[in-house]
Image (cartoon, rainbow, N blue to C red; front, top):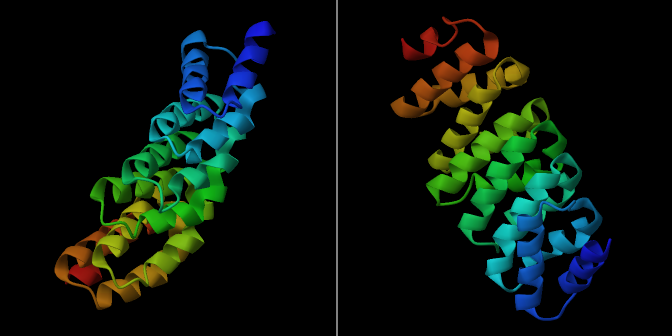
Length: 201
């Protein structure tokens, strides 16, 4: 109890090095993070970037109960590296992190390939609840954004079958590489290996 109280007080300190030490102690001690969840989550947006990764790792330890705090880590004002780490953690949480879908879709518009890939995987792990937003992303003009959305839908598979008409319409007006991606997605979404053949022919 004394350790918990001490950590809580230090997480509220105005000095970033004190907050950082408290996060490090939580990481090393294996203590229960849940009692400190709000104070740890506040470190995601701390002016000191050195606090943000430890805070994300601790929230990952909590898992689903911490899902509501991850959109802050996906904010465009965060460095792409922080956003990518957050996306990777969300992928491990899966469907309970559905509140992050919109923020993850925004990551698909990034110029950073690693971030786009991490966001696409996270959206796929969230699953069916991400499909409506991914269908909207298929309408974007940036080919890299669209390709990431197609890849995410492909990973979701049959639960994303509602996106089949969108993929067929997209393929009809896309360059060859994206047509191939759409053909593969159609096969995965419908469970029919031949569904993408008309596009290729």
